[in-house]
Image (cartoon, rainbow, N blue to C red; front, side, top):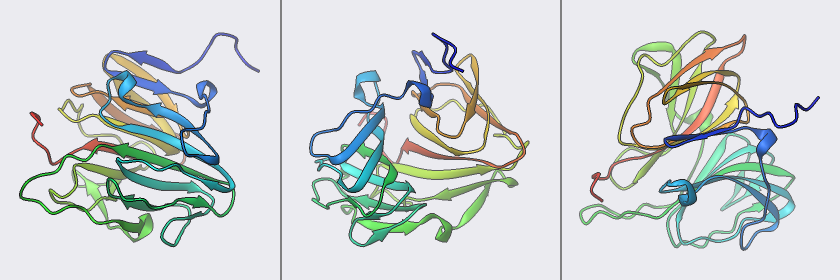
Length: 239
């Protein structure tokens, strides 16, 4: 039963929590038989845009001049070949690469203007499968596993990881840093500290963290918690 006027969603100066009950859907330019839930954009102060794209069969994602990362949550996409759940593709800035749904599908989409380096090569497009990416413990904790979906190195100006927490595991410290984050909860749940506030979070929630936002997460429940997380990376703060 709906509690009128109540939501877990919250906006503060240094963070944003959006829960599915507050999602608003609207197509972006170029979308065909698809719609977007824009979770964060420069309108709130972010330097990137992240949204969930929802496709009908045959739906198409619009083009962009920005670089793009697409992670399939459910369904099947065609993007230089087939992409199924937990598969992903990186498309460099300015590269026209159609992304079409082969079935009803959902995908996390991250778009960011590219910041080139004079002594670095331009990124090439690539595809991957999360299960094929090496999983490494964070701070030697086997109950907290990280998979880096973007290759390391200065060619890329952002990173996208998945982080999986066994029930009861937590970040080893409160982090405060120059990088901003976009975070989509994929499974499970727990408690997130953002700034001076504490929030219960669960699968489907989205979080934006501004630079220097105090942040910490602990997993609760009987199943692992997992999220997809973006951060700007490999560039000088003055850029």
